[in-house]
Length: 317
Image 1 (cartoon, rainbow, N blue to C red):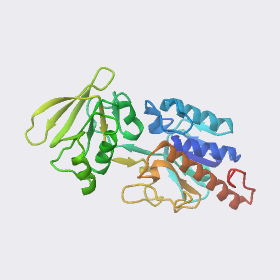
Image 2 (cartoon, one colour):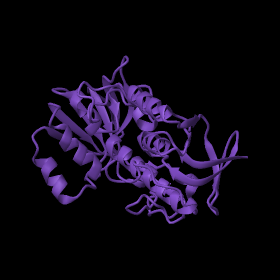
Image 3 (spheres, one colour):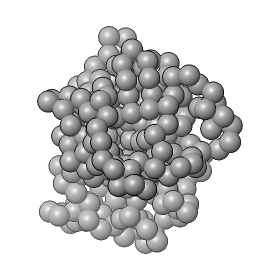
């Protein structure tokens, strides 16, 4: 069994930023990456809205920079997956496929995942015309045609956002009326760039290296057809990657971990940051900010436990 001061579970923007700040505080944090280093941003083709990079960069490039910067100050990375935790301490216990650890503080940064259609072509074309984030990728569809799948607030909000770039936005919904709020619906119905395709589901996404068309089926008549498009934005919901912690930390009705202003859960020594605790913003920059706050509060927490001095970062430097 390995004893650690801080374990960070997850390696997206929140986890990597937490690693940087904890490392700068000489806490030598251990990051257990999970299945994919970088989380959702690692599959984002272009990131153009992260401050400091006016020329933009790919998701994998941003993740690599995050990791190198954290490692520079002493963060360590274990490419493994957490399979069980015990928060009855501190110290708390974290088990992976290959090792068992104890930690005086844990930061949960496991992120959230978009719900997928699970149709042929979706995974293969993700990042090549299939997207789950209009704010991230809308710019790349200037003067092009896009399809938005969904009928709730997120689908309509993102459809309206996409009209800033696309020449036509078609919202495909499995029912004959939207679930979005009345004001959003009215804005969408009044927008000349938005069209609605009712009672329809997408059954496949096709293209040669990039999205070119979708196959659809009418849920009432069963009639099948094809829609030509340059992009597909899928908004049928997100789910937090929090199953592992169910019953151990307080969550809301949707499974998002509840934290206070200081990123603390209801369990002493356990913090959460990023999309696993954020059902609203889901941006790289907000997740990074959460990771920063969580790490700074971890140092304060450990300092109180150990009566150790607080570093310049934790003091606001």
